[in-house]
Image 1 (tube, helix red, strand yellow):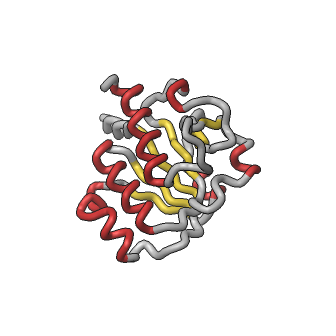
Image 2: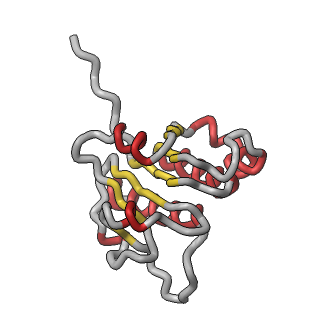
Image 3: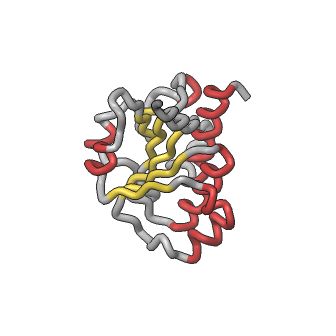
Length: 158
């Protein structure tokens, strides 16, 4: 008798070289309430035991499936064939609302101070969040939250 396959998570939020513990804690809370998994790709600008991470994540951290990777290559090795990874960037032209997200998609965000490197950004389909008021970019935890909830809305029909 075969065991049933594990359910596919609603989605995955991937942070490439995150720098601020508080942002990661806030994103972890978002993942917890959505049932999304959180993937962190090193190096980090903080330690996972950082007080800011724990404070921002509160008791939600216990409800998050967290994966850590030494680098991008280590993360890529874990992707199933056909996995869809969406890179979020202010350099994209397509809006996140038009992506057509499906269960199990990966939403990739770069570090707070510089965003995704060009080599990575150019290798993946890119999406952007509208910023009609201008400015360089949204805060990482805000951007991840907006994108994750839109993906959830598309997948679950909320």
